[in-house]
Length: 236
Image (tube, rainbow, N blue to C red; front, side, top):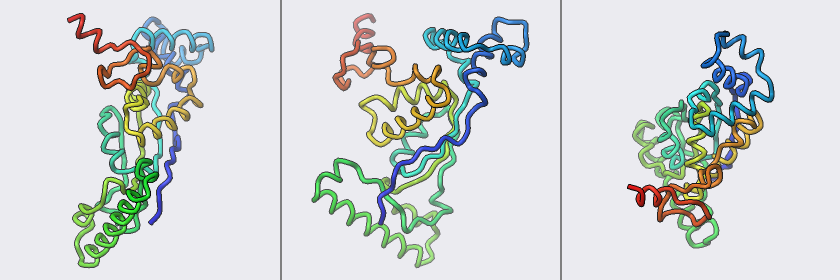
């Protein structure tokens, strides 16, 4: 058995995403074509107009830019959370068609630092791998044998999201209350996005950082931020 290593690779993105977004913003107020506006975008316009639409919440225009990531070394538990972000495209390694008898695994930090828990966890994974192999040897179809595989089984997935969806994703999954593994993945994704479109993604992140507001109510992580859910309850 082998422990998996998280890796996020940016495969592709919209050509000059910031310029594209600004051209879309300007199209709403211009007689010129989007192509003409795209050619005339200046650095000052990029900074000013992107800040304006993000601050106003009128972010439909940032949907015109998208990013595609190849992600590996993550668990099935993570991808079950990931696909809840519905405005996105996903292509995941199939356990129906890809036989996974020698699967890599994800080791949670809480288990890794507890020697007894780690022993139990690794022994359990070893037994699953052996029994999965036995099912295949009995000519059980992979689509049925896979039922025995664990949430900790490593998987690979290609993900495409537009910028608006990414803003929502980063707000939810960079929150300290998000599960540790998806938070690590979101951190690496944001790093890649900032390399390509810094004027857009400098505004992305958990709301306690970007807006100084926490929506978690009594479940907040304790960071000093206005608790918006409490404010709303008091108001209504």
